[in-house]
Length: 114
Image (tube, rainbow, N blue to C red; front, side, top):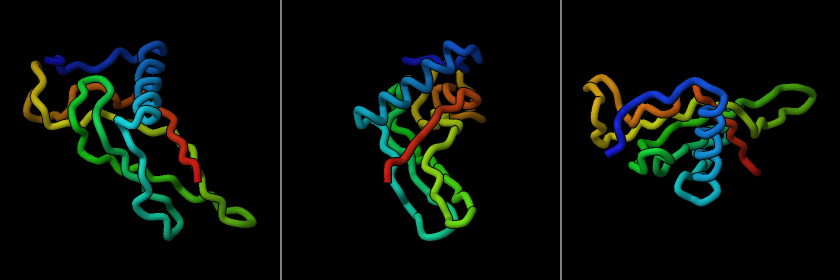
């Protein structure tokens, strides 16, 4: 069983989490799918399995804002806090938290190809 803990806030661990998310998106264990792109904001849903504990995540809403200028341009790259929010049991986790503890301030860069 993966023990609940927060990752260190070091550059090496931030890179490790970002690489894990990028790899999970590439191999399909995480998916980033459009849910609404009808207004000034594009909404996507990140779903799948946590790269650390491999439990099913509750869907995470990701919001890409539209940048206004001469013509609206849809921003397709952003930095987001992606945190494990699985409902599975993890030793050491109290009832006030969810997930395995990884994510949070270890933000990752997400991009959408459209």
